[in-house]
Image (cartoon, rainbow, N blue to C red; front, side, top):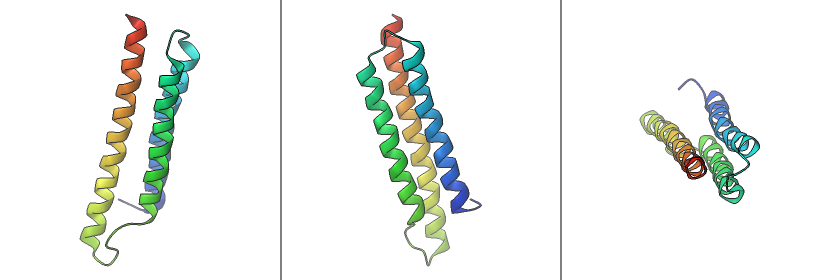
Length: 98
């Protein structure tokens, strides 16, 4: 990892792309359950805030190995949260498509 600043930018980018997918679905699919999609968007925003706070306050600042593992797990959590949100969004779209 290069810097915390770049990590925060990555968090912003990944989570905003997932959020924009939610709004894209709302805009171009009139049959979709809007409440479910808004709930997914809310989860994305909540997770974004949590990840940003975690990026600022790492555990074990004195031990570089702990810090590296901490940020590695943060990135994995970010990707997992985004994947989960997009899977939920996909399920909502599939409900309407069939």
